[in-house]
Image (cartoon, rainbow, N blue to C red):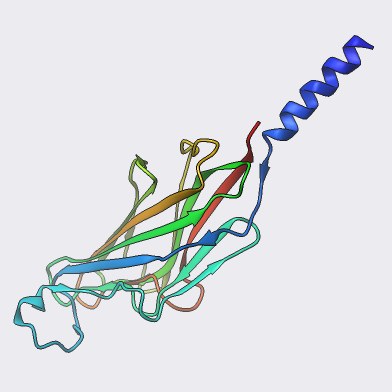
Length: 210
């Protein structure tokens, strides 16, 4: 009987630490960015200083969905980098998402995924870099390079995974932060992280506190 009680206690302890899924309760999201370099077709502006520093990444027109599997999807209407000449075009986007932590749970940042498309000329190439952060715990950068492939449209898929320290039990809120950097070169080469199936996905991991 003692053995069975011990096994039952171990099972309860294991169950209490199992990951669970919640629909994230999101606060006021902040999205901002900048574009640097030789971008093609810049948006109209009266500010002469923005010729080489343009912003496509913003909350305006952005769709943010919290799902019941513990994920948050972000779809942009205008987030891309497009090169106009030999120089490099860079687009940077920083996203801050405050969330409420359910009572009796702690939360970790399980993964950050980016999906999009790219097209290059024969000398074109691109590099996508992402970094995720939960409160003050910043993860290492995850990056991948893409190159010309006989003119075909390429799928951009990059996921930053790994263990992120969980919030402490008793904390009521947390801040999720992501920084994305798109760098592209080659005339008329372009990389899109907007519209259609292209998006950014936060995946969270909820655990019950003991």
